[in-house]
Image 1 (cartoon, helix red, strand yellow):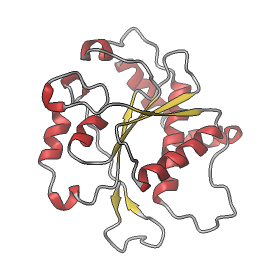
Image 2 (cartoon, one colour):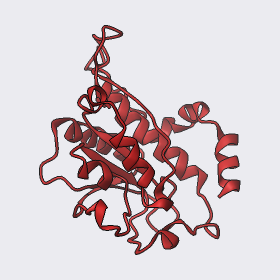
Image 3 (tube, rainbow, N blue to C red):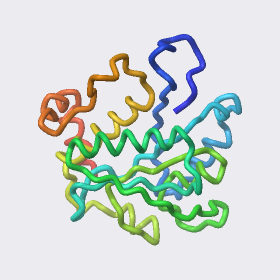
Length: 207
C-alpha cells in the first residue's frame, strides 16, 4: 500500500494498492528478500505498509478466527487503520481478529522464517501478516507439507471478503459517513458472486 502519488481519484483513494504473488515461502522467502533489494528507492520510500497473506483457509479447530502477526513495538498509523477496519469487517461475519506481536527474526541467520512480514521488517518496511492458521512451525517442510489437509472453500471465501473490505475501507474515502458500507453476514451470499468459485476449487485440487 503506497501513498497516492497522482491525481487519479485523488479525492477518494488515499493510497495506491499493489498486489504481488510471492510464492517463496518454501525457500525461506529468499525471493522476497531479493525483490526488496532490487526495488527502486522511489517506490520503496512510498510504501506505507505491506500486508502479507498466509494460509487464509481455516484448516484447524479455529474456524472463526483470523490472526494478525507483526513485529513492530509501535504500529504505524496506517497499520492501526487497517487493523481497525479488519476487526469491523470480521466481526460482522462472526470472526474474531487476534493481534499478536512476534519477535523479529534475523533473516541473515538462516533460521526458519514462518511469516513473510519478517523479511520486510528487517528492511525497515512496515509489514503485517494476516493468517487463519495460528500454528507454530519449526521448518519449511513442516509448514508446507499440507497435501493431506482439506481446503475449506467456504471459510476461504469469507476470509478473502473480510480482508478485501478492510483494504478498501483503509484506502478509500467513502462520501457518506452515515452509511455502513461493510457487508454483514446475512448479505455474504450476494458478495460471493464476485469470487470465482471454480478458480478456488481448481487451486484446492492443486494443493
